[in-house]
Length: 470
Image (cartoon, rainbow, N blue to C red; front, side, top):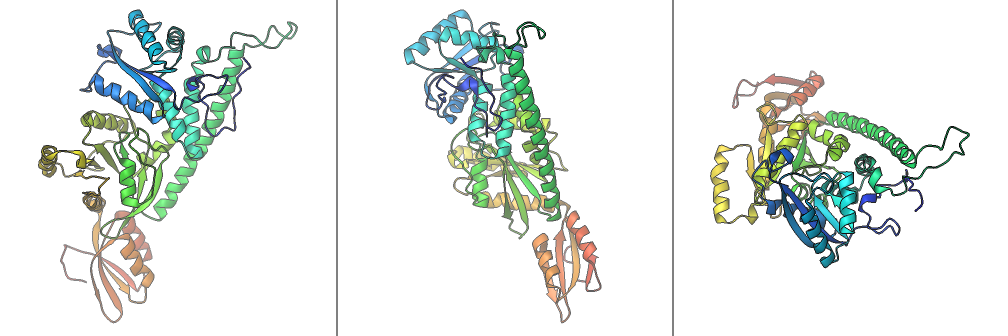
């Protein structure tokens, strides 16, 4: 087999561990797959930490396989006390699954768990087919979903980081030596060292490019602060309905399907609030339980948008059987990013997909609502409750606003337009020379207005709502 070469100009990596046969370069899309969920009884080995059932975890793994167009012909859950160092599973289970794979003519086995390179190699020999683990499958999904150059770079970084530790398994030619006749310092470097060096060089180049992306994003954020639209980031578990809600509020037409990780690249659009104020709404990548650490590190540039948002809207699939567990996973990732719900920076929780609840479920949600002011129930698909979300966003943004009386020359149309576009005008009275405007403004906008103050523009602080104009 010829030496594998790394394509440095590729838009995204061809993930070697997911091709059915390197010789013909076939992609896994449409392959017949068997999904194996590995469940450890002991928490010390990654066992259950919440109330997720084995059936739900298996169903999620099947959903991940469907997201990459794999034809799942069989699925099975295996319970273990502890992992086997050589094959993860016990010999009896390995033999049993080998029979199932042969009976279903599966050409790919997806193990919903983490496999070491040695375990992956041994299982491929025993099952006589390609084997990938959860990390490899999610990497392939992300690679297929990436549409921008930034997304492709982030996926490639994660994939190469993952591949680097698996050279011993993936590349069969690595035991050969190359170069050297014995008189220039020995037999030459091993192929595995050369391949690892090529990967390291590519990783270094990608990290440099992503630093440029981070710097560019920082410049864009500075520009957005000059045009002071608050940034609201949508976060949530994958398939919770973030992109559907984003489309409902912005009419952006972002791809949204009933798939895990239907969208990957972040999208930002302007949205008008009921009071006339505008915000920038950001749709971000979805989270999932046991998210590979390679992806968390690779997507730091994208997740920076979440960190820098003025506040967060956490979208939940309230109709899902594991809604509480999914919420805990998202909260855990947000905490890792340094984002926590508190009085200074509240997180609005959206209980999405209420259209899928029965009457009892909707009654339970309605009874909880008065006790949870930062929770909004809605259906992104039907539009029910979306106006309530915009109203809640408006009230959160107004928490630091101050009501001012502003006297503006009638001829100063630019300042009057600025007041209407950046604040909430609650009252206005005009005389022959001036417009007297009572307006609610955020702290940054109050500072900007102060810098505009001239003889024709005077700003007064209002003692209380309803006080007469100065």
